[in-house]
Length: 339
Image (cartoon, helix red, strand yellow):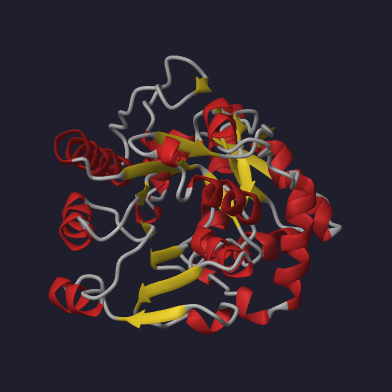
């Protein structure tokens, strides 16, 4: 089987690329080549910027694929480009959408693929919805062989998965826990969330590749495990061997205090909402699949890796100062009420 992956070195796609190579797939990676050294040998590199449509078309002119998947398409214009590039050249095109595209607020906390798509809070999610709409129209009108995959919060060993962090990743929050400083948890920490280890995600994704029953379908891929944000942060602190000093602050307040971090979208439009995913459709399409890595187990692996790799420890003093300032403002407001 021959696969083209556009991107191939991100949190999700790296695990997929590795597992495909281990399974003996003929794998082509189309990207700018900045991180391909992290992949196991065997992938065939097509080095170009996918945004240069003319160059990309020339690079794949003599190639055809069983599956093509784009992990870096975020807008309607980008999937329209993919359609022009890959129509007639692949037996399946997989678009990676997002579970954040599901309606906010939810009419039912249990999410299936038939849950309506509508997110007025986050442009990222609305763009994904527009991409899905275009691709399904091309499937209906032209038979373009699309499969839509909707991930939720997927993590790998390089970054501790948390809800509130700055632009440089979550290390600064980890550092605050190590130093005994308070960390911010949005809301009261009791909303439900799902974390999926990228190795588990990859196994399910590969089960959809070349799967005739997945053509024309949207499929969500998540773990079946549901945890609260309090449990998530406690699992991280436990893996670090440190006590958790949590400060709970409403998502609305955080969005008002942190416009530079786009909390209005990432929280109000995503993480502030309780989600419980029903993966029955995925399991019908990929018989025998189940996510194997429980979150507390996965986060221990991540913490061990991050602590052993300095390149994963990017400090963010600006975000650290922001956390101190927001927590101080909350304490001052409480003191003023009691005065």
